[in-house]
Each structure stands twice: as C-alpha cells, then as structure tokens.
Picture 1 (tube, helix red, strand yellow):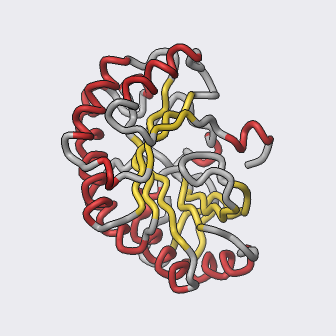
Picture 2: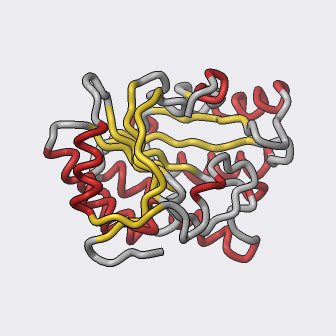
Length: 242
C-alpha cells in the first residue's frame, strides 16, 4: 500500500443510495479506501481488501475526483473500505476538504485503532461504531478483546465530541446471545442512552444468515435497555445497487 503523506490508495468513488444504518435511503457519495487487514466472514467488498488493491493517487487528484463526482442534493460523504483508518492521515485531509464544501462527513470503520480514530474525528460528523462479535472472525481470539477495547474507546470519543453516533452489530446464525448481552451491558454502563443516535442489528447476508427468531432474540435483548433499536438488512443489496 502506497501511503506517503501526499498519496492515497483508493478503490473507487461513486454516488448511490445509503443501504445501511440510521441514514438508510439518503443520497450518498462513497469514497472507498483500498486495503483491510481484518477477516470478517461476511465482507462483501473483497475486491477492496488487498493492501495493494485499487490505485494510488495524490491527494490533490482525489480532491478533483470528488469535486467532479459530487452530485446535487448529496446528503453526506462516506469514507468506507476496505478499512479507512489504515490511511487515517489521508482520510483526515480529504474529510476536511469535504467539510469545507459544506457537506456532512461519515466514517464507516471497524474502529480498530482509537489513536487513528482520534486524529480523524475532528473532521467527521457522523460515526458508525461497529462492534464485531467473535463469530465475525475479524481477528483471531487472542486479539478480539483488544479490538473491543478500541471500539469502546472510539464510542466514548465520538460521544464526547458530540458527533452523531450510532452502533451497529452484524448478527449471523452463529452469533452468541450471551456474548451480545455482555456487550450491551458493557456499552450501556459507559454511555447515556440519550447520547446515542441509534442501535442497528444487521443480519448477515453473505453467509450464515440468521433466522427471524434469532434476530428477534437480539432485538428483545436490546429493547428494554435502548428502545431506538432497529433490525435493518442491507438495502442496497435488495435494490441491486452498490
């Protein structure tokens, strides 16, 4: 991955309909950063995972690409991947450029590194904090606790900085309700429910799709603690768009 101070490894830039989370249905520009070091079993952007995937550009060239692609009435610009925090300096630079245009910025990351997240956060308006269950295989069992610690730190920082913050958890047929309840307890003893913009339970659609019964069990575990919980599949896949 070519990540010098003035270069970025980019997979693609395109405009489509937001298919996930609390802002589902909004017209969105997606900036897909290339490269991801995690191994989530449900990943649907395999073409952007290799660290040498995509193409290297100068930051100025990417800014021109953004300006040329930007369509009227775009609600927000998503930094996604791959894993955007692998190129946190470039994301911070580009996000500032976008905010200076008067647009909302959105970070879609695994939040694997709270230090990198902290450097990007001043230039981000909307933060999705995704807690990855152990069945995700994002990391091996020896590193899963460290991943959760970083995700919790990112959640705390996002709320402390008054960002629009929501949580997403992907659920598969193998996800443990006991592990999920432990996660809920940990999260909601740290934050006030009023500080959270939503809690999304997203069923896996690539493999190990959960049953309706399982999804409702996860919903029922959340609702008594936080009523603004929603089960939302990936809309863009149902529509057949990116």
